[in-house]
Length: 73
Image (cartoon, rainbow, N blue to C red):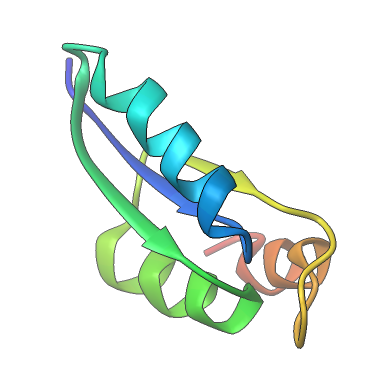
C-alpha cells in the first residue's frame, strides 16, 4: 500500500522537516506541500491525499477552517 501525503504549514522549516521524515518511508508514494489553508484546500481537491498534516495557526485561512471546508469531500 502506498500513501500520498499533503504537508500544510506556513513555516518552510516545518514543511521541509515533515517532508524529510515522510521521504524516509517506503510506504509514501508522493508528497505535496501547501503554505496556507486555501492552498491546502486546492491541493487536497486536486491530489486527494491519503494523509494530511495541517498547521493550525496560519496566515489567511487557519488550518481548522480549511479542514472544516473539506469535511465530507
